[in-house]
Length: 290
Image 1 (cartoon, rainbow, N blue to C red):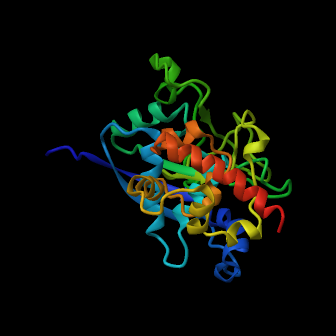
Image 2: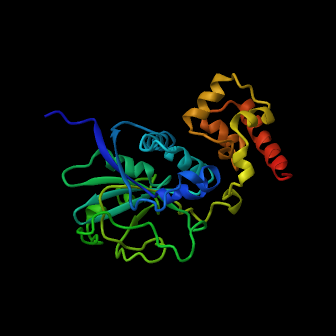
Image 3: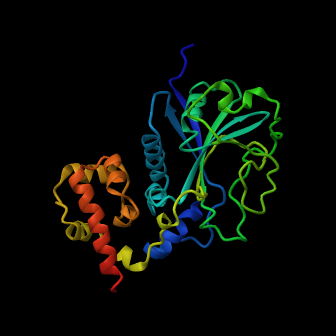
């Protein structure tokens, strides 16, 4: 039997991550209660793929899940503001190993390509501790409560460092004791769950607080077309428009906190990248007067 060139990835996300955005942009689309623990599934090709493209594919897939708002677009905005942490999960019957991105991405991707038998893979995002209320329960939890805690001596779950992987450091976390009434800390333990990708808000402490920005009503009232005028960007610049679409920049506020180098890395040409940075500064200064 020919081996499949694709593997299934389970994505776990929290719709409450969209709450703050929608309260300002489209409050009428906020339900009385957000669904608990929604899941999505997608097929991932067993081929080389950078983290940037991997995230883009996941977010584009999430965009197809709802008709009322762009889930992937909102999460992309949060990710651009460094409010999301992406965590890959490799699940076996004996437990789960977690890989924090970006440092653990290469190890996670390599294991994802070589999964066998009962091994499953998942991906998730979770809320930044800086954004999470102190009395809010953590979003880290198991999807498979019947799976026992991971034994420390299980060499199958050894840290990628044991495999001489230079791309993996402390990004591998083993979770046990998923009695999650408070935000999980590094190294905390939880029973294994179904393969899932956690997409949410736990931001590494090294990220500067200046990157964690909130959006105000006036920010949402400024359209992307109006931002192009402020930034002196050409509305017929096909390359700039294609990069905006590819990176899911649905709203101008997603550019906040990004430098010229960040934008060039995302695919923009140097000229438009500089205009975007200047345009953001100009837009912010104008909106502060409203």
